[in-house]
Image (cartoon, rainbow, N blue to C red; front, side, top):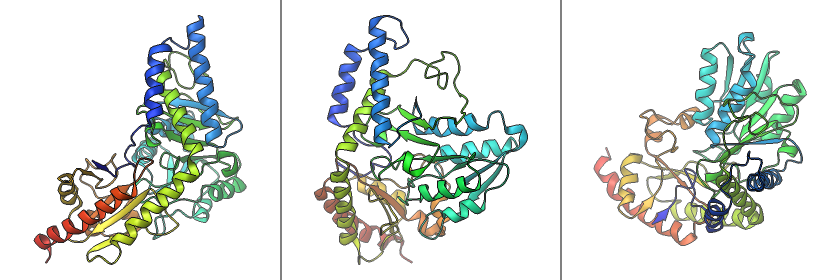
Length: 382
């Protein structure tokens, strides 16, 4: 199998799989229990938190373990705005956010919040100046993703945070960093953000585990009540094996970061070199404005779903768009916001690389793509 859908999920590191197995066997106690076995599990949670905080460049603050990026994104919005909705607070976000941000924001808008959706430029990047200009007296939260999940566009989060805080230091600045971790360097302290969302399965960790970093003095109310775990911010018995696996993946990402960046760059360059000049094939996201782990490719006159299934015959896994939205018939909101027409969008696929991708796989994919694109386009060309 040639797996090129790492933006959807990644294959766990072998070390993570082995560690989770060991944790399930040896550290199965409830970390809230008062006996020694419970204490040892609680200690593992503390160690995991410290590891992840180091990986994201946070010297202080709180880290809440969640079920993943979707829950983390929901918690920051509802947790910050829960007691303020009656005062019609203002939210700033972008038109290219993940559905777990956009749908939460639309729900809050229906409840009375005011929302400004910032449009990207033609490259799919959000302007820090546009965000700052949208700030109002009643702006409560600003949320802009660090790396887009469909195009890999990298947003200037540090500049956004700086400009927003200059206007009002009390505004909560959040960034969805689910696609950023492991693909660009994250430093919450240098960026000056108040909160970021993460997901373990995007960095070769387990599914069903994620987290929300929250800076000290930022008040966030819980979504889940009942057990008072995690400083009352997220009740429920913690998934100790999954959390420790998350931390192990974060540790590996940090240790191998430079090596991985070189590999991702080489993989995308190989793809661009192989496909550039091929008739009917267009790279939507070349250049330094994009993370190297995502390639957005248009194959003219071939619908993405048709091409996806044709490539499945070669045991190649890619995506026709975001894995969280491909079951919906509507065209990509990200590419629409970027200015592409519907035909262009319907002919766009997403290829994404990870820690386990090698250059031979990318070369083989490109050769097969060119062959299949030529064959399929003959059936639809006007």
